[in-house]
Image (cartoon, rainbow, N blue to C red; front, side, top):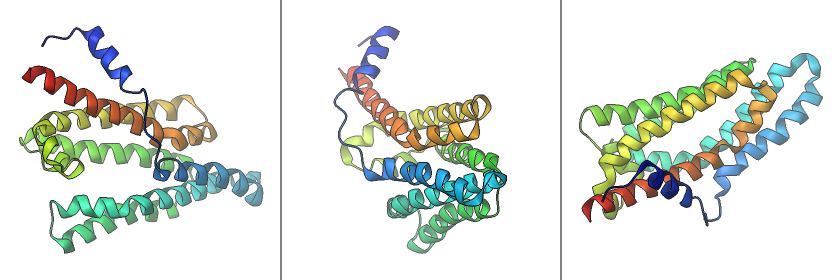
Length: 210
């Protein structure tokens, strides 16, 4: 079935309607950040703006990683042995926290988010170039999603590089304190966009089969 570009845009936007309730994991880290940063700014004083920023961001990131750690381990278990999965998960979770624990410059925090997108996009891109769908299968393990995995792999490359560009743009055009608000709502934005993109892939695949 042929669809015009306008049809695709309408289909994509329609998928944002009637979204289900959001998980705590999407907004709790942002709440920690938006509460922690002002409190730390007052406690540490105006001369320690960077330290307040980095400490609040570190706390929020720790909450985010902690809430998603079990799911990350489960996805890695689909590709690695139990020992390897735990080691890789601990490295993936602990290394960013260790780096940020030594930082007092907001730019380190902002670029850590960009690095996340680079790593995830790189993993999916490697699968795409090698004709594999293992990473996509770890995110969507259900049998009914198997036929969509090749296009979901392509979609995830686009998704992560798009949000990388968005984050780098925000770093350049807004103040660090304003970027914090962007980061706080970023999981919600990302969840909505990702859900819409996944449904778009499913609908387009169904259209091609019709």
